[in-house]
Image 1 (cartoon, rainbow, N blue to C red):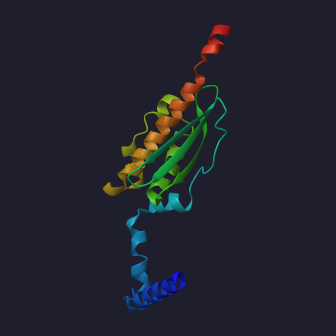
Image 2 (cartoon, helix red, strand yellow):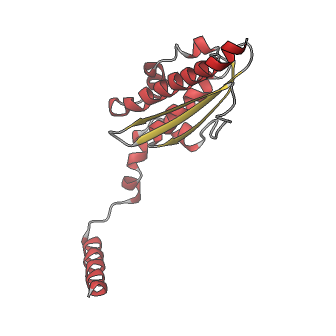
Length: 167
């Protein structure tokens, strides 16, 4: 009985698809033009994808998400003994603008001090990628991920209460 129902559903869907108007190929590719070429570049060639050792004392990890759209962004920074960010990695589950924002954020934080990285704003990311207003939340996520990674790093630098008493 259930198999017959599935078969009828497939036939009905096929019939609807066959009756649907066909679009020329150039019209099908139109949505790709809605993204600026910088977003497409970072989406197709993302920089610094991957992970760092989150247990390392000199690595800060920021994990942020946007419940409204389902984007999730993990951004990690590695800081040297002088306070300079020497590496950054990201993993993002989301749209092209979220991936591009993460990729750009990792490029921008590298080479900066922890304090300089705090000055990176979502408006700068959005402007660089030419994000439309409907995608501004992606640049906001990137800024939040940077701040969360820096906060995690700073937390790891504080002496633990047990260590402070031993000294």
